[in-house]
Image 1: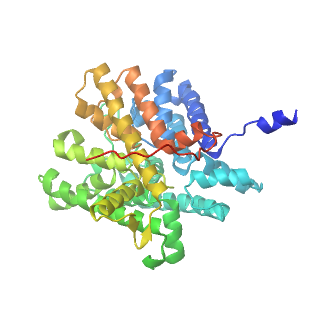
Image 2: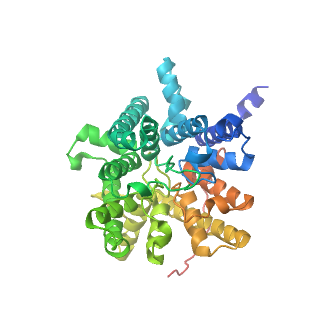
Image 3: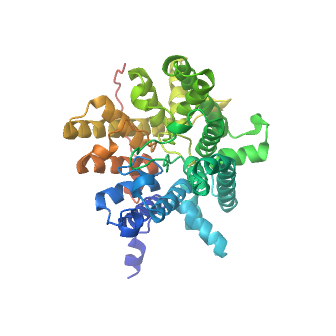
Length: 445
């Protein structure tokens, strides 16, 4: 009997995270299937409800039905709640409820919270979770208040809901919008391409949500003293700045040349920020050149930063791989940032994540291209948007068959929970093998 107790397996923190996301998606699917969730009062097919629920919880934004014209007020509210849960993280939300109710947080729960928000250590995790809750609702409230006058002017009292919905969707990097109509669905924010209030507010919400709560904790603690920041925060802020500046310059000089200067600047900045990984658009992406669409694909795959509301491979993954490449070019043994050496295990993890994302992104596109008969380039755009949890599309999502939709569902789920989380959850309990095989050289490059 004692042996049986010892052999009993407990769920790891990684398995808790995966099951938590899956449970919320399942509940959301059931709720969205209810007649009260659609404006027509009809039951929504399972595959459409599952797709929408997955996209909302995984803060992606790809949809098969226009959010504004298909879903009722109840359905939109369910979608918004799922976006909030998915953006903050299922574990963070559960921990928040525990903190509010005054319950003590166990060691196992603290470990799960640490993994969920990518904290470097377990110490202070409860305080950090409290900070996550406060900054989330404060920023979303400010975003809604700033955008509200614009939406009230355009939509009357409905503008209050529009401001709240888009503020939460932007901060959580979800990309869902409620702008479409029956006659003109899937329009995103294209009607606001020249509005500075909406453009600037949405961009700031995306960036704030996408750089990660640990980075904001660093900014709160150290203010403008950049040298005191953690190495990770320095890397995130530097990489994020470069990933905004370079695409903005390209878009300004190559894609939006026909727009007036003011709109050209706003559209360039907006479309440089939103692929990582918010999914809003103020311009017609189908009019982009092949090079422009390729840049958007790369940005979607990179995504946001660890411990944020964003998905993708993460800015730190790309930065680590770049630093490692520079170390090889300079014949240095170790990669480094800001006078600090990067652990070799981190480089291995970054390489693994890159291979996983590229494999899933390409293989998913191949399946969709074969099944649907759609050009590979268009499919690559769609799958990069799904696995990067972005939500941008070239207009094919609603036209896809069930097989292709399930491919996107799988990619969205894997993109949100993270590839390494899946691996660690699957191999938990296996003993570490310390023995090594004989070494032999192999030539690469």
